[in-house]
Amino acid sequence: MGAGVGAFVVELILGGAASGKSRFAVERLLALPHPVLLATGKAHDLGFREQIEAHRRERPGHLPVVECGVHLATALRSLQGASVLVESLDFWAFAALDAGVWSSESAALIETVENW
Image (cartoon, rainbow, N blue to C red):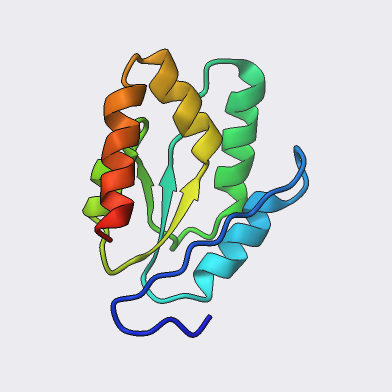
C-alpha cells in the first residue's frame, strides 16, 4: 500500500450479492493498524436483518464496530487515524435518501473525505 505520512488509501471492493465482499474487506482491514468497522445499514426487512446478523457472526469479536446509520461523515471525523471499513456505501446512500438527508449528508461526507 505504501502510503506516506498524512496520506490515505481508499479501496473500493465490488462484487455480486453474497460473493464474499464483506469477509474479504474485513480480512484486509484486520491487517491494518487501528481497525474499525462503520456499519451503515439498518434492517427494514427479514432478509436484510438475516444478512446483518450473519455478518455480525462472521466478524471477529475484537473488531470495534460503530453503527453510524446515515451519519457517516460524523463517524469518520471521529475516527481520524484509524483504518476504517465502511459497510456499506450503497445502504448508507439508500438510508440517507429515505430519511431526506441526502443533500446534507453527502455534502458532509465529501467535505470530510477532502479534509481527511
